[in-house]
Image (cartoon, rainbow, N blue to C red; front, side):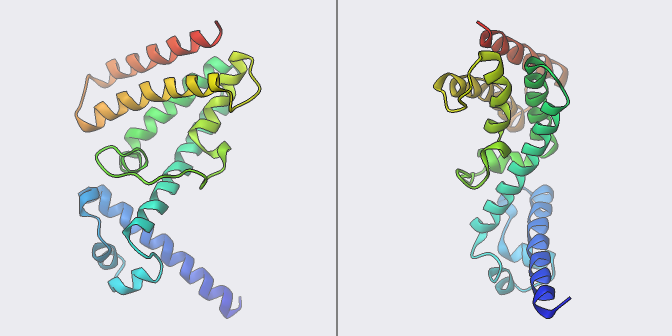
Length: 199
């Protein structure tokens, strides 16, 4: 391996270490505790070295947001692709979304601005990697629509998302009902919306 490749790999590894350190700090202490100085201490660098990789904390937050969206997208795709019918796919997609929100709470908070300012991800990810791109396929199948940009598809997607995100947010900010009751509410809401797609 040449020296250019080695330097490039070292830089990429350092960027990964910075992002991983930031995520660890947030998991341990919360978003309010994240600072360039703390990240530098965690990976045993000086703060000015961190600025060689990221211009500011917002750059790190943007990278963490992107990582969160990619992870959520993977889980939603995997859930969708595990089932054949659009109804089952929609159930699985939104349950995967729900599970992600609590298993990866720190990413979710950043991605959707729950108790922390969020970063805008428009045009940074391909459509098929976003929750919208993943969930609209079965919605379109059930509605008999071939255009993902059709207002009716968009409306139904946001109906699902509003309810699921609202329930998640209530439970992140302050614990709502029991997990069993929340899952039943989630299932009832998804089933109810899915029924309207075929009308």
